[in-house]
Length: 285
Ligand SMILES: NC(=O)c1ccc[n+]([C@@H]2O[C@H](COP(=O)([O-])OP(=O)(O)OC[C@H]3O[C@@H](n4cnc5c(N)ncnc54)[C@H](OP(=O)(O)O)[C@@H]3O)[C@@H](O)[C@H]2O)c1
Image 1 (cartoon, rainbow, N blue to C red):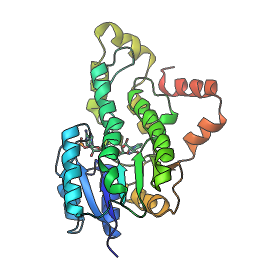
Image 2 (cartoon, rainbow, N blue to C red; image 1 turned 45 degrees about the vertical axis):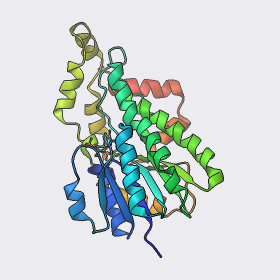
Image 3 (tube, helix red, strand yellow; image 1 turned 30 degrees about the vertical axis):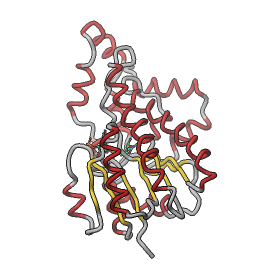
Image 4 (cartoon, protein in one colour; image 1 turned 90 degrees about the horizontal axis):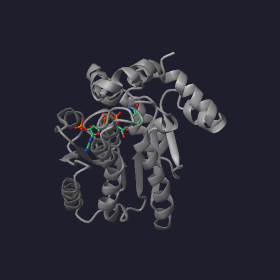
């Protein structure tokens, strides 16, 4: 039997890299998309079947060229799995009051429109599979309200709705879609480097800076203190067993340390009580 085939976006680092390495180890033929830097470490860790290509998901020409290269390499065969993993959390920083709207749109360009763009571009190849699947990588941050850091979860809420709609629209064609929500995995996104804090406060005009600093903590400090993190390898192993190998995909998978906490909170605690909790977490007392 021919090897199963997959395309993973944002594969140079973190979760994407971990997933590509796992699929490669399991004998899949993997196409790995990267944004800024060719993923040399990934190439070194994988077998000769791995094919890497630039795929900037916010750039329609780059997506079209990646789709063309994949179609050419597959020579009429199917793409069995698309993993829309690429995302950015730092494109649009600041409070809602002063966030740069163009930067916020750029964040959506990656986190929402990027996933949609890839899905549209690759569905013709995915449709050819006898077990076609799309995994959109969301975030359990969609269950949180993060003051001074709301832009990223807002984009992931939109992605979750896109995934729900895709599940129903593509079901008649036998294409399974799911939302994979990592809850704490080591990656550049969860490393919260010091400059992100500096960038956040620098985004405020002088007349608002003191006001917001008086009331709110830097959200990265709160999230970092609350998080325990899995390695991308441990995460990828679990995703492979629970999601990639599942016969029937559930609507969503929250995987990672303490994965039950946020959905349980969202399900059983009233919205007003959740709001008070988030205020206690992120405001200065
Ligand atoms: N780590 C966690 O605990 C966690 C929790 C919740 C959700 N997630 C989700 O998991 C996914 C992977 O994140 P991660 O934690 O592994 O962080 P990461 O290592 O920063 O991965 C994000 C990847 O997306 C790429 N990317 C950014 N903009 C892009 C663009 N315009 N086109 C193509 N690729 C682009 C980045 O490449 P460049 O660096 O070259 O731009 C990077 O390789 C994301 O969807 C994230 O939202 C992660």
